[in-house]
Amino acid sequence: YISLDTGSNGDTNHNNNTYQQLQQQATMSVSQGSDIPLLAGGYISLDTVKAQTETKLRRTKIICTIGPACWDVPQLETLIEAGMNVARFNFSHGDHAGHGAVLERVRQAALNKQRNVAILLDTKGPEIRSGFFADGAKKIDLQKGATIVLTSDYHFKGNAQKLACSYAALATSVQSGQQILVADGSLVLTVLATDEAAGEVSCRIENNASIGERKNMNLPGVEVDLPTFTEKDVNDIVNFGIKNKVDFIAASFVRKASDVTNLRQLLSEHGGQDIKIICKIENQEGMNNYDAILQATDGIMVARGDLGMEIPPQKVFLAQKLMIREANLAGKPVITATQMLESMIQNPRPTRAECSDVANAVLDGTDCVMLSGETANGPYFEQAVRVMARTCCEAENSRNYSALFMAVRTSILARFGRMSATESLASSAVKTAIDVNASLIVVLSESGKTARYVAKFQPGCPVVCLTPSEIVARQAGGYFRSVHAYKVDSLNDEASLIDETKIEAVRVGVAQPGDLMVIVSGMLYGKTSNNQVRVEGIGALPDGASEGGLKRLVSFVYQADE
Image 1 (tube, rainbow, N blue to C red):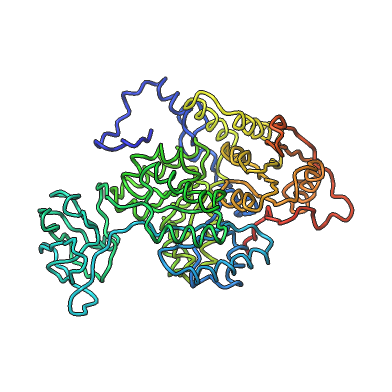
Image 2 (tube, rainbow, N blue to C red; image 1 turned 120 degrees about the vertical axis):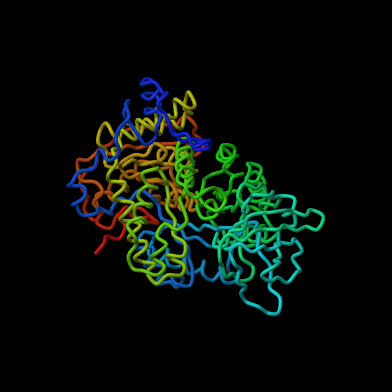
């Protein structure tokens, strides 16, 4: 029932819907599988609450921001063992030399642990900041009810009466009555008057605050006239990201589909066409253009920090659910980020509300969850990843995947009227796995596209993607839900690859002799007619197979909790 207009007039009354309409809408919901509305928690019992957390087959992927707290090889190995799938490099901080040294250590740790860890470059993006202070002051104290003038002359040295702002078009962008948020909302200003000729805005201070220099500023509801990719962003993408073969670019403050087109062109022109684009939706303009952005991008990040500054905070959960659902229907991976376990920067245990936040993101349908300062700056980085992994698993294990598959399939057909050939193949594979109670689904894919479509239908069993491409293995294992990727030499000898996969599945306890597996062959080595789904049995481990046969292992099994 959530749309971009939800709550715009405060009306939450759905009583005008007929019972038949409710039935139809319930079937179209990704989170429901019944033809009548269901109460939440129908698959949770007391035994579910009391059972030990099963962490072996986590489906949701975890992105960890790398920082001083965890950037040495032993610490990075700990993060990998705890469940890190993607290492995030935040280019709001640091330089190329520093990031390059850390990148080498991340790749060394991944090699040591024989895991495919993907690399995500998160751009700084455009920003609006307050200016510097006069007389060498480090802070200024502002009093509630007082008036302060904001000037677009960024050379002006400010004080408690007048403060510089880096946004040149400030006076022409805001109107009387609008709010301006400073320093992550710790200072709230209300616009009283604008002087376009002088480039100044008079504001009322709404709360007592003490702020430092160069604090971030947000203009809720304003479509700012700033380039999506700054000169620094372009330099970071071309001279670090492409040069060092990162797997993902997380583009900050994407506002329209042309931003994605321009970034893809930049990547292609400099040899980075294999890098996947993740659009961070952080403002109202991005929300307004979300459908077009989703169609153009490879993935979405629900960046709730700045989004919570740009739209009312009580609306953020609605925006999250809307964006995740639409991404699920489009088959585009989606990441939920910001303050998920924020208290663990300082504390070894999260709050109950934080665990609920992570779990609800999983239940909403997120493919990945992200940690920021929890891993970059906090001493409890390992505990944060383990808590997040356990919470994801608890949420995943409370779902009915047969009902979920039917809900996804029904929603796609209701929205689009048909599926593509690859979608239909993937849907058939997941349905077959449900029908025969398969222990796993194996996808042979050069590009990873078939594996993405299988993940779209949210299977309850693990998905193994066999690919000859290292970057596809890192990307598929990094942000496709349920997918574990293996780099293989070639897909030509399919029979041998399937046999090796069976050995590995039995060896690590994902399958037992006598279980079934579903095999999906996508468009392999130029043979477009090779699409097929079939079922094979899994036999006992042959002699001498105790070590498994697959190369570049991304284990089915994450480190079990002690």
